[in-house]
Image 1 (cartoon, helix red, strand yellow):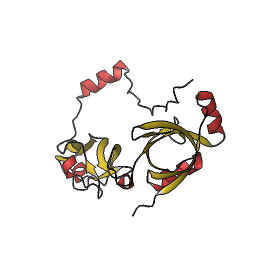
Image 2 (image 1 turned 45 degrees about the vertical axis):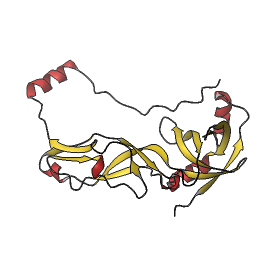
Image 3 (image 1 turned 120 degrees about the vertical axis):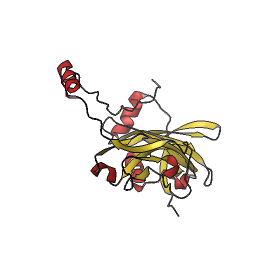
Image 4 (image 1 turned 90 degrees about the vertical axis):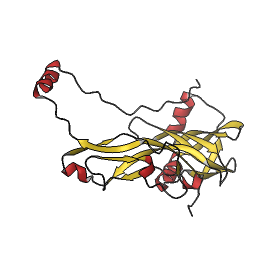
Length: 212
C-alpha cells in the first residue's frame, strides 16, 4: 500500500505577486486548494515539505494544520531551471475516487532496430490516464528493448502500472523505429548556406498568480 504523506498548511490571507515573492524568500510556497464544487482556499506550505513529498514519488497527500483534507497535487509551477517549486495546486479528492491526469512518457532500454540502421522517434510525450489518487504515477515508462526495424509501439502495447487505465486511444503511436532518411548533399549544403539555426525550445517559465 502506498504511504500517504502529510503536508502542514496555513491559510493565506494576502495574495499578489509581491506577497508571494516574500513568501518564497522565507522558504514558503503559495498554494491553492479547489475541487468538489467547493470554494477555493488560498494556502501556504513549507517548500522543503513539498519537495520531500515530490521526491517520495506520490502526489496523494493529507493536508493538516489549517485544515484536514485529502488532496492530490494536481500541478506544480517551477522556476525557469526546473529546480524550485513556485506554486502548488491541490485538488480535493477522496481515497478511492478515480481521477484523470496527464503524465509524461519516458523510453527505457535500447531498440535493436538501431543496430540495423534504424532511428528511434518518440511520437507521444504525454499520456492521459485514470486511476485512484494513491496509484497516480509520476511517469509512464515504455520499454523499447523489443523495438525492431521497422517497428511501432502503440498505447495498447504499453504495460501500465496496476490500477492505471490509459484514456489516450489504444492505436495512438508512442514510439517508432524507421530507416534513417539521408539528406542529399546538395540540400544539406543549401541549408548550411542559408545560415538557418535550429529552433531551441526552452522550458516555459512558470507563471505567477494573476492577482496584482
